[in-house]
Image: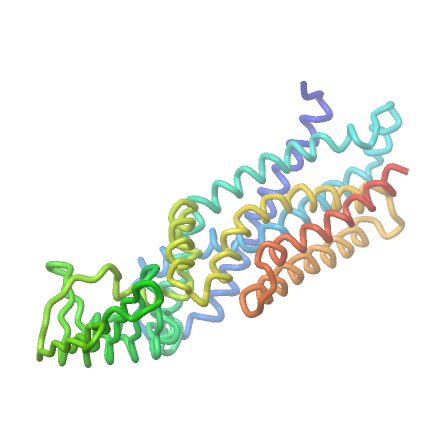
Length: 362
């Protein structure tokens, strides 16, 4: 059962967090508009598309900086409680610090569930809209950058089949210098080469030009040649170079499926996709850790007042985001375990939360 004090603190927790979002989201939009207004005018972007972009931007921006907003909001209203000696009155009535913390944890649970569901279903769509707009209108050569490197593409499309394309055009659905190798028990069974391969969306087939198929025999090889040949393959030519932010745009179920498919193909970007997956679960957990730290830091009445508590809070919040970005990048660019890299900030700040909570109790 929630007491009057619990409801009072919980209401302040949620309302301050909501106010923080409503305060900083317009500031983020204004800053973004001031940076991109020239590009938008140069490209004559329709107002409707700009409005849709800023809808997606708001969701993307708030989800990205959610830890900072939450931390600052808890610091803010807890410092006000401390400065008004409300916390002293609550603890003096016989309520332990652990019991005092309960409505904060209930609030963190509500926020975590909300962020978790947003990350599963809403943020992926907004991430797609946000990134599509940026790469289409705001970046020079954005459509080419969207696909990353389209040259010398190697893929494993099954346990026994490998393909290579020297270059690939996503717009025309054409690959050049195509090679497919089929193995059987570590021995080459056949090899197909073509100077060009074209995807035919009408019947879901491929057309190969200057086609050659070499089937390896025990005594001699069989060679088949032709200027043009239609075929059906078990790969999507567009999947050879998925958009660089593809993992951010997928719902949880589709992300799991995509990762498994890319892992079976031997994708070199698998760590990038795993970082996105693990962050969907680690960020909501950070709500509890940051809430405990914020309460422990700001529950004491200080000479510096709210200003000192806010200064400490801002420093810790940006340190958390710094750790999160640094270790996320390490996992994407090196052999560091993505699971460890994503959860490392939570582990470090979790230990800090326990330490600060023990001192706050004293």
